[in-house]
Every structure is written in C-alpha cells, then in structure tokens.
Image (cartoon, rainbow, N blue to C red; front, side, top):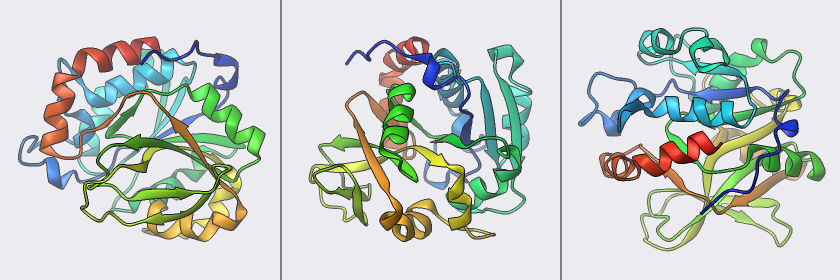
Length: 251
C-alpha cells in the first residue's frame, strides 16, 4: 500500500524516542550476540530503517533508550550525523521496561510538549505527520498507532469505542483470530511523565490502563506492519526487506 504524501511541517519540531534497550530473548537463537534492533534485514540493521524513515519524514532529533548491548548501538550510530539526524542516548543500567525507559529519557525532553515514541523492533508504514495531527486535534494525552491483523494470537489487542478512543486492552490469548493490535508507535504529551513512576514499568500493563479516562486515542493505520521479535517474523522481514527499504526511503 502506498502512503499519502508526507507533510513534514507537523514533524519538524517533534523528537522521537526509540526504545532499543530490550534483551531480545526470543530472537537470541538466530541473533545471538547482537542487540535485536541491530539484527540485519537484507544489508542493513533493522534500526537503520527506522532512522531513515524518521529522517525522510522530517524527524531529525532522536533519543535512543539503550540498555542491553548498548555499546553496539551507540558505536553504530554515534551522534547520527552520518544519517543527517542528531542522536542522543539515554542508557539504562538495569532493565526498566517500556515506560521506565521513557521516564529515564525525561531529561532529554525538557523543552518538548509533544514527542513520538517507537519500539526499536517494529516497522510501521505510517505518516507521522498525520499521527501527530490526529493527536493534537483530539487533544489526547496519548495516541497509539494501531493495526488490524488477521492473526492476533501473539499480540495483546486494543479495544476501542466508535470514536476510536481506547476503552481497554486484552492480553494475548494465543487464539488465531483477527484483531486490532498496538503497533508500537505512540505520541505523548509531556504530561504523561506524571503518570509514570520511577523504576521499572510497562506502558502496556502499568501506564495505559491507568490513563484511559484521560484520553487515549487509537490511530488506525493501514500500511505495512512487521516486528522482528520472533525467529519466524525475523525471517518474514528478510523476505520483505526490499519493501521495507522502499518504505523507509519514501518516509
């Protein structure tokens, strides 16, 4: 599916926080000594596709929340100048989970009222400008990019009302049914930090369920979605590597 033309004016001043510190234990059998975001897809590390996608949509300031094998990621990307972006690092010394990593990165976001967050192991073919505009128009505290998939067995699903406001989450059941899933891309107001405790915590389990009454919007996208969290999906990414590269270049 071809994305609509990108409007960079919505993205220029919005920084992106990339969650790249996970252990990647499920992928260890095929990528034993490399952090999951650096796993090669074709000739490029997967994380490089995300950096290119962000840059090509006008997002030039990135904060990478590193942790497991952080040196490899920081040595690969440095200050980001080789990709025409500026990269800062927020390194956790012990696993903090998705929400804890964002909380740790708060000191890098003191001037930002709105910021983008992405999982470092999933690629979502999405117009970040449209996502940001939807978030601002809805005056949401948080906006989640969602994807409709035919087999939601290995994902938790997102429940929404007719207006696309999130009403709840269902844990993964292992049942191979269609469902609306969390695609791992978010827009947050900086007031989200008041709802994240210090230390280890999860966006999905600890934060989102507590803030539903404050406005969590679901932005459903219809482009390509893939994560590389399992050997099976990592193998699928290899098959799709040309499409992924084209989507990253297109923005």
